[in-house]
Amino acid sequence: MTDEKLLYEGKAKNVYQAKQADEVLMVYKDQATAFNGKKKELEPGKGVLNCKISSLVFDYLIKNGIKTHLVRNVSDHEQLVKKTEVFPLEVVLRNITAGSFAKKFDVETGTHLEEPIIEFYYKSDALDDPFINESQIHALKIADKQDIQYIKELTLKINQLLIPFFAQGNFDLVDFKLEFGKIGSEIILVDEFSPDNCRLWDKQSHDSMDKDVFRKHEADLVTTYQKVLDRLVSQEN
Ligand code: C5P
Image (spheres, rainbow, N blue to C red):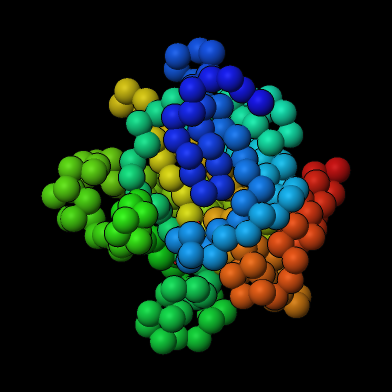
């Protein structure tokens, strides 16, 4: 652990100042939350699993030319990352209908979309992360038009890389949430990529292997995330 200053306490991670001024330490927690923190439980082992899964995903993206904040893992649940100015945006991409999209538009879950959908949400616990459109992002000076365009292109590129990555583990990548930050004029991928912030369905059974098992009380979260890690690791070997 670290004696450094706590910069941010999140639901799934804490962020501390690192020794180097331009780096921070991300510490993954065992706490699982859903419905914007309304459902909260301790899930021993979750922090380590998410850190390992996210490292595999980020390493793969980095190898494929995506710039990210990851510097290196310093333990099984801690990552040293570059300090960025994080956009207060959650960028959601959907390949298959599910979750809030299926509910909001009263459409069937499990329909493959002809083209991926990108949605933005304004990160604010107090406001319950409301949907925000591009002109609102621009008007509120959250990001300029060029940055929004670049974030959308990067999100689509990441999706094109991650669909085959997860397919090798026999998963359909249904949807996911990304966050981006800026260093100078450069926009890079930040935060994590784990079953906490994506939907993964087994290709044959269509069983959820992500946080939906916790949201819907379908299966044990830690056992499910361990299976995800095992399948991603075995595809690498
Ligand atoms: O709930 P919804 O269908 O909008 O979620 C879309 C995707 O974004 C899911 O993979 C979900 O796990 C992720 N998400 C997230 N953090 C949020 C909201 C959604 O990681 N605050």
